[in-house]
Image (cartoon, rainbow, N blue to C red; front, side, top):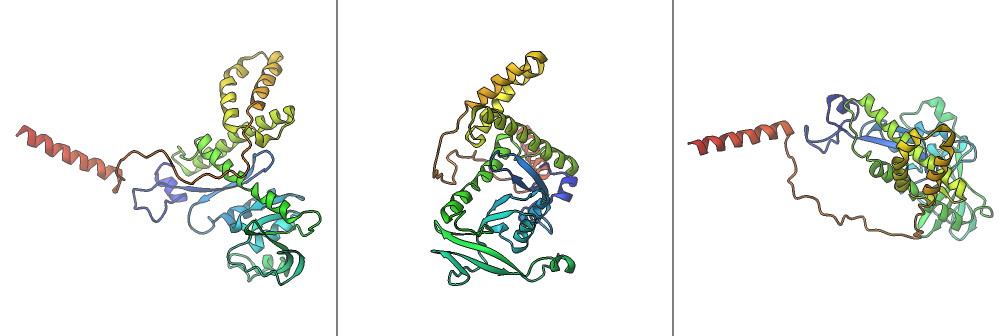
Length: 320
């Protein structure tokens, strides 16, 4: 976001960057619906400092979890207290095992090959948690641990007859959708660089971006329902382009005939099928080379003054 004092106050730049050379940055956490891709809720924090971590953002989104929901998340959120909070709200989790937790399949109740149920004891009271809140947690959590496809999954879904290890693996593989969704929001909607000069307006700008994203997702879901296909099989970028192309016509079209135009738009969106790419793998590397410009190593104002000094010296030397 723009390097203004107000933005720096709430969203300070990385400590690895020199003063005057960095930009304020925000961390955004979100709950995204797996079926539709819609953002169900979001939270914004600074990229560093107390209360800015992904676990803290997730705790602020816990009221959005309802009975019967399943939360897919990576190992960073496989936290005992978070899982207990989700379970208390009637939800379940499917996550990868946290790197600090040791899995021993010789313990617990064996359900199958490298598949068992164990008791996770309550950890020590976190420093940020009150005594009363800590005492509300149960003494243990019953968790299922499964090793499949080279990784260990942890879940609160304990019945192996209703959900086999292969089903858990297939479900967790769908978690990658949220990474694609965030890329779509940042790159497809050009939200990676924000424009507002104050922190209050920055938060509104983020909210408006996510509102626009959800409106496109709503259009995709409507088109998918009419065409009997899954919303995830339709192109977000293509849908956005169609909505922009038809925007003026939708505003000016007579109300009595608006349903005809809407049907045309939704049918066009429904035709934007994504190719089926099972097991797709891409290198995390860029083919396009960046422009060979040097990095700015001092504040921009000082760099301007330095250029003026050099140019002024050159003009005097030529005049002489």
